[in-house]
Each structure stands twice: as structure tokens, then as C-alpha cells.
Image (cartoon, rainbow, N blue to C red):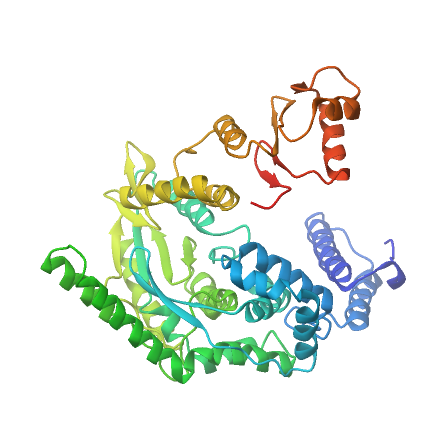
Length: 506
């Protein structure tokens, strides 16, 4: 066996991956050898085990425990600031922070390392999307701190324990992943049998997450007490005195605004009923909707429940999207029994099942995350809700005309939901060319680059390329002009086959 010295291993991740690889390789050798009835040398297993033990001891590798002392670095805070600015809609917030960005970043960094950071009040508002929700918005300072905690602490420490079928929020997962699993499972079960779907919806999930239970679960994966204290302060923000007062005031304002709308009395009463159904936060319970840490913590809260359903109840075809639980089977009786057991297990997390939870027959139809699935002629098909579809189209059209920089990422995110893209690449190219005619627009279609410019003379382009024409460029010259524009600090839009890169401020 080739032995790799510890000096050759540069970091902990490499060491841990090496441990896993060696383990897998060793057991594969043992299994194949036992089948062939070959005797193994007695000292081989001992040396391998000892080697693995030494690596673990040297690097103190533990999946459930991370060294968090170096996560509150200046670089991480600065990285969080740039990411927050990309996603922050409020121009005033960004501008105010950016005037003294270096000193503000250092201030956050200093407070985090001294563990004396205090959070500001939420800005609370109500949206209708399509039902009424209470959204809580942080200050840009708090957004940065939450970003560091979420992506540098929570995700690295919690992600390894999450199952693949827990599909909400995480990068590379989301609704598209949920659709993938559902269609995969349905196609597996459809053969000459009825397919049944158990759909369980948790009642007011975000409002009923128990803080004490959540912190006890986190302590198994995060060992740093000061970090846990910071996470607890994030969680406990929903129990501040002003939260419920502000929610009640907002509900009254929304109801008062309804009286001035030109709608029927029946419709008005229905909307008032829905507004009054917006819950308040109970003491020791609830996560804020709109906070990046809340999303990750809500995904993690039922992690052990996911393992229970998959491993103990043996539910092979299981999906969870936040508070929506899906189990598929050909056996309806099995799903009925599972339903009762799941209800009992959820009560351990201080959660209750929504009465609308039920068992559906997929052969008829079943709605999941905006898609209505059904089986026809032995094929699993789906159709999208027209209300949702039209709402997405309306939003994308608005962004395309008002803020193209936000339009394109939104279009990419809805790609899995829409049956087809609403605008082709060529249409987007023409649109950009007409809208931003004072900015160079570069397009890469069929291995050729097309350049439109009005603020740069032909001579500059020709001299930079040393060619006669400037309308159609081959790949080599196309790369040359990109380098030239970057060196010359010329603002432009770069349109690729799959994405748009903005080198200017909209």
C-alpha cells in the first residue's frame, strides 16, 4: 500500500476526503477478496486503520464540529458586503453604506470578533404573493452579518448532514430539484399501478419553529459557544416587543386601504379575513421571513425528521420542500400508516399538521409547487397554473423594460418553471442595442462576435484589432476586443449564449 505522509496533506478538507477514499477502497478490497476466498495479510487492516486514526488525530477531523474562530475575518466580511450589495434593492441603503464602506466593514469585523455585535430593528411590511405574508428586512449592516453567519458557518457545518431530498434554499437545489425528484419517482412507480401521493403541509411552519429545540439541534454541529450566542440573538429578534405591534399596525393599514378600492363587498370581506389570519409571533417561537439565516435554519430544523422518515419508516420516495412533505407509493394503506407516524414525530418538534393534508391519486391529478401533475397514456405530464405563469411573464416584461440587470437573473431562475423562454438571445441582443445605444454591446452567436458601438470611433476599434472590418469578428479578434475594452476601462455589456455580463452601471 502506498503511504502518503501527513506533510503532503495541505488542509483539513483534503485529509478528510483522503480518509473517506481510503475507507471505501479498503472495504472494496476486503469484499472482493472474501468473494474470491483469498486470505488477507493480518497486519494490512491494522496498518490501514492506524493510518486513518493518525490522520483523524492529527487534524482533529469531525464532521459535526468545525473550527469557527477564523470565519469572522475582514476578507469574509468584505466578501459578504459585495454579495449583499448585488442583491440589495434599496439604493439608499447601499449608497449610505458605500460612502464609508472600508470603515463600516472594519467596524462590523471588529464587533464580530469581540462578540459584541447588536442587531437593529427590522423594517416590516406585508406583501401579497399570492397570499398575504409578513416580510422582515434587515439593515445593510445586519444583512452582512447574516450573510457571513449563513454562508461561512451554517452551511459548511450543517450541509453534510442534510439529505438530498431536502431541496429548499440550497445552491443547486430549489424547485427544479423538487420537480426532478417528483417526476423521477412518479415514472418509477407508474408501471401498471395506481400512484398515490401523501402531501403533508405543516401549519404556520416559520411561526412555530421552537427556539429551544432549534438551538439544541445546532449544538450537535456547532461547538463554539460564542457563535451559538450570536445565532441565538438572530433567532430571538422575532420575540422583540415591537414586532407584533408593527404587524398589527400594518394589518390595520392594509384593511383601511381596501375600503378605497373599487371591489365588491364579498371580495373585500374575503381579503380582510385573509389579512386577519396573518399570525403573530409567540414567545420562544418563530423565524423571520426574509432573513437569509432563517431560510437555512428552517431547512435544517427538520433534518433529523428527514432521516427518521427515510431510514426508520423506509420511505424511499420522499421529498421535502421547506414545510411541504411529499411521499409517493403504490400502496395507499402504507401512506395512511405513515401519515399517523409522521404526525406523531412532528409533534416532538412542536409542530402540527395542516388539516388540508391528504392522500391524492396521481392518476387523476396532483398539484405540487405550482405544477399540476397527472398520468395520461402511461406518461407523467404536468401543466402550470395560468395565474402563476401570467404573473411571472408580467414580472419579467416589467424588469426587461425597467431594470435589465435584474431581469436576466430572474429569467434564469424561472427557466425551469416556464415552458419556454419568453425572449430569445437574438431578441435580447436587439433590445439591448436599441436601449443602450451609447454603450458597446457585444454578442457571441454561432462562434462570431457582433459589436455595436456609438461612443467609440471606428479608428480606435480598427487600430486595436489591426483589421479592416468591425461588424463581424472571429473568435481570436473577439477576445482581443474584450481585452482592449477592459484595459481601456470602456463600459459595455457582454452578452453570451447563457448569461449577460455587465461592465457598467445601469
